[in-house]
Image (cartoon, rainbow, N blue to C red; front, side, top):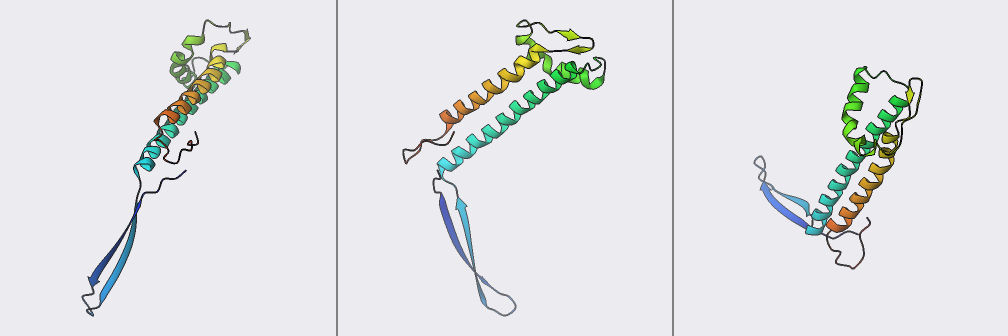
Length: 144
């Protein structure tokens, strides 16, 4: 659904200094409507939120894989990923045990976070997009 803004047409008359001819220059500028500006803000919010949700999911996935593959906990990258994701998995640490097989560990807290954060995050994005979108003057719903 597109709400039409305003197309501004301008015409300039410029006199050429060399031969004295008058040059006509026409330009068109598009000024978006208030609804288009509002939808642009909602779309920007959606893109940024989806990027954050994707980054959290990628970090949790990296944590899960590092633990599953038995990565050295003293390695710099492993410390970095564990440090960043520790606050994210904290709510889920007591839910299930984390079985280990030699060096490998099935990080159940990270696994639960891999499911919970994207579902909740994308649900909130859809809800906020539906709430923040401007009213549709044609009575049709926006695609959310």
